Length: 328
Image (cartoon, rainbow, N blue to C red; front, side, top):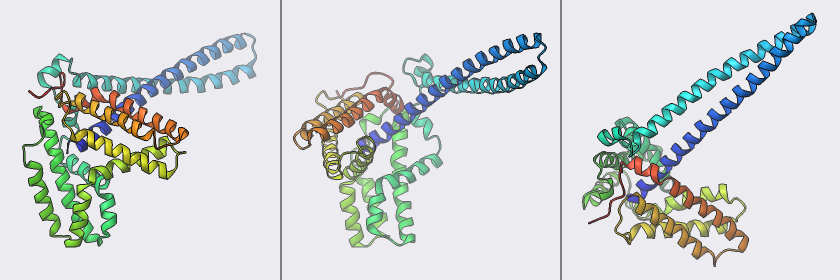
């Protein structure tokens, strides 16, 4: 469960980072537009004063029309700039509220993960999307009648919603690192198995059991396959298959082993993730051509950088206000 929560949190952090970047770019564009229009406006006013003094009515009227258009554009640009500045202020205020250094945050810190899932409707909607992400391959393989698939989707949605509820509560309590009580996962899986067996026959349950046992690997491979297609599009599908399998194997292996320093927080998870990527590169160095390896190396380095830059945002999202804790 921890690795699934890790990827949910990482994805959310990336979205937040991209949102901040977009806001910043829009603000800069608005400032530039206002600056340019002010310069054009001043130039036209100067020209208009000069031409008016020459009593050139035709040219004067033309400049007045042009000046009116630029003045309108400038007013619109200034209004947009005000909106962009307001958006940026809200973004910065939200970041300050979530910052561990904020004295107000220290008094009543509410992790962004808790803020995102404020109500159960949001949790259920997110769980429904997770069903598509986690079980799309399974549902495609089962080829169930529409009504049976809808029932299975409903059961899986409620199961995943419960996981999100646990994560939100744990983030609020500051106990997310410790994970669920021993036996909780097994108990929930038995309950899920019982509900699914009411809809699926024995053969279909066997397909589910096999898929569930390897779900994390399937999810990781699917994710890496899509990313490789985007960021390393010239490598062959055969090479992509090798790379995604190696990455999935190393990442899963890294998260199954206890951290060497006993760390249990975000920093420990990020370190494991980074080590897994580096180990993947070492394995792939003997399996790929020089050109393919160069492309894959760039892709994996992007993954490492992306993980590291998301570390602080993930710490905030999970509600870790201080240094990552280590087990006693």
